[in-house]
Amino acid sequence: MRLTTYILKRFLYSVFVLIGLSMLIFTLSRVVPGDPARLALGPMAPQWAVDQLREKLHLNDPLPVQYYIWLSNALHGDFGVSIVSKRPVMKDFLTFFPASLELVLVSIFFSTTLSIIIGAIAGRRANGLFDNITRVFTYIGIAVPSFIWAVLALFFFGYLWKALPTMGQLSVGLPRPPVRTGMMAIDAILMGRWDIFVDHARHMILPSLCMSIGRIAQDSKILRAGVVENLKKDYITSAVSYGIPERRIMLRYLLKPSLIPMVSILGLELAGSLGGSFIIETIFNWPGFGKYGMWAMLNKDLNPVLASVMLIGAFIAIANIIVDIIVAYLDPRIRVMERA
Image (cartoon, rainbow, N blue to C red; front, top):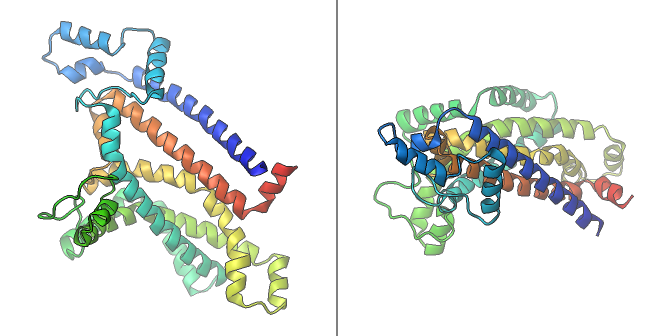
């Protein structure tokens, strides 16, 4: 029951955060220079057409009235119509977001798995050869932005070695599976086309790895520090003195508390992944929501821009709640504090 209360508190905090985010992004979208109606219709459109579109978009109303109208529609799932694509923004979201989510999930899988392996080994063998190599890697991985890794990947794997595909989701000649979930890997499995699944998986390797390198460097560094610190705790010394096998100590007693700081920032990393996907998807020509959001910003298409920020914000809020639940499971002190 106490854990349920803890989750409800986090959910209420997320609601207030989303309301504040909606106010901020809506205000910024209205004060940015440029007339959205004029940009949508082009410089050659007559003024009467621009005025008519401004009236239709409620751009002549006071800002609080505009926000109230937009928020009322958004709560009903109506984020308006894209001025450029001429389609409902929610329909565009359902079309493009699954591809981005698929890429982000694969990226999170790569980063989490490799971070745990690298950080645990480096922390257990601190100041050894592997640990020193890991330190160099973490410095480089954190310092170099993801789009630099993307450009290097295009050069080495796409131009020099030609080992992996670098553009799009599928090779030319393969049919796209029927859209059921929007995630091509799952749709290919449901269709029973393993050739499409394998080809699509090869297309995901480079963009997902480029999105993961910075997180691998950061997370492995955090986990390594946690392992080194927890190795000095008395309960680890006691476990060793009782003759408990090292493998069991590592997996059951050492790794679990060391993962807490790393898991705590997974929500922020998810935000970084979705934000970084804007550039990565553009470089690798990945038809996802990041590329769609970049296209909307360049065209000052306000409805998709607002929807992009809010929907990604809602997704990150849900991810943070899940992370809080995982941390509460890993750290019994949180459950004890809630009971107190």
